[in-house]
Length: 260
Ligand code: MF3
Ligand code: CO
Image (tube, rainbow, N blue to C red; front, side, top):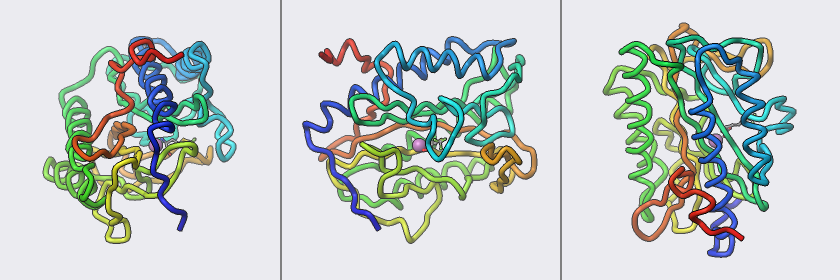
């Protein structure tokens, strides 16, 4: 197993802005999404937003992934492809944005309601987002990866929803996927100790129904087996001596970071 790459202050001088770009772009996409736009238009908008900030999509070309972002609608869980599909009022769309900027990657995701959505869908979004923050709160030096996993799993299952097992969070830095894996369920194999300088993407994928998923014939799109709705929220987080630092925070904009 590859070693965990702890980030130095110099690394973080580059990684913070990379994460700020990813967060800004995700926020811009949220404002762009409305009934009638196609997921292709969302992806093209995202590409332009990333480019205008001097970044590159971390996803395009990764294992031959063909789009700049992942756009997963309703029962799609993750890795949804941009298509001519129009978004309709009441749909939910999970947007995953990974940006390469000055050699480092920021990775974040959020599920948006298109125009608005029903109460059941809104509850799924709320529980998934809250599970992410409960997981982040455990990303403390001295804790273990399983503390993050347990916080997410307990909250999601306590609310009657299913946690996806097949896809997990991960270390992130110069590469999109570094050690350790960060499952959203307790997996005794993923019990590394958390140390200051670790940067991890925590990303619960939560199904309204059963946790089981399958991959569509396009080779990418992951959907729920039972057709239930699914939501996905993700932040890149820095483990410190004290409170975890959410790096993909849209309020930490590039301009506020005073990046040269
Ligand atoms: N955030 C996702 C992940 O960490 C996105 C990867 S999409 C891919 O795996 F297309 F690049 F694979
Ligand atoms: Co990720």
